[in-house]
Length: 472
Image (cartoon, rainbow, N blue to C red; front, side, top):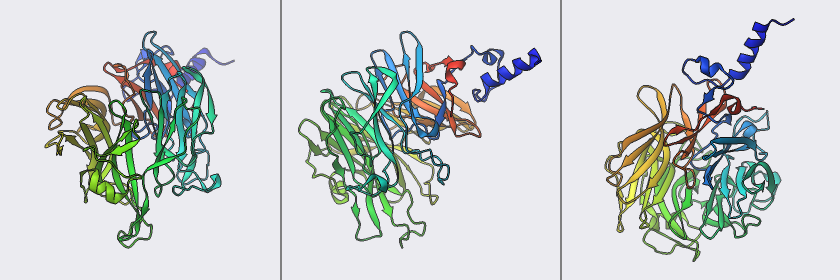
């Protein structure tokens, strides 16, 4: 007969495994009814990122969030701000990545979900792609890598419990980015293949039931002066009224056996660019309202859309927003090249358009880290940032500027953890003040991450019983 004490110990271990922070466990936390500050513990790999966005939407009193879970499949959860009730997470689809035990790179991380809610209240996610594979057929706009770009829709409006995967977008996608316009039109932007591919968009005018053919807007092409191809990394978002805004940088996609750099193909990116798509006229233009011939080439980008030439340091992950008058502000991570596969520590550099020229901030005072930008006026701007303090404390915080980005001051800390770090999403679309951003915190010795929904009052909490999710 099993002793009661042993049964208690076994139950206690089951309830608390993998759910503790770095602080000492209290008697309250040992209880199955304990409240924790994360909403799930099955985030997997780099479970959210700035580039795949939005990862969350606030709609009709509820915040919906998406992230990469076990086996790189997409998961969706929701939080009702009135009833204080969490639902999910539910698995919303099955990725072709993350299932091969013989693959050298166990977690690909390129197929994280982007989320959108259409005008009929159906929830959409795009996920699972890293450019597709040759078995999927010919890619007319680029080359191949891995995975399969997929589009899934909730079976019922505003119901995250059941999903249907549709066959109405290109399989050769990665870095999915959704934009919904005020008239309900949906745009899905992505790279149509691996590095040596065009960036494209597909448009839907019927709430995502059908999409038009892919339309190229950034062109890849072979260079003639060095052994490389032109490639790009854009960040796409809704601007004012009918505009879609794009901040981007340039990737020198070197050949593996090129003569310029013995390291072969490396993640080398340079420069900062910005342009606008007027969806009403279907005209692309630069910040001066000059029309652009599409798809944009490297030569035309340098001539018409350049914000800042950065030839030596490396760039990474641009972000942009516009003030009520349509004046854009752009941030780009910039830092030195210190390694073959990864560039050195980067700091956000901030640029703003004053109506005549791009101004670069003199001193942003920002720590090294990644984040998203919110522009309230020409002078008032906030950055939501994940960073690491001098005391080896990972934190997610908001930094405010009231002088157009010349100086920033940390105004609020949403989450802190000792000896830890975070991956961070872009800002939630139309965010509730209590739910602005999604982050994942890595569990020590594991590929899993605890998932947090953060807002002005810190993390939105949940019972430990609900937050512990089966991971396989």
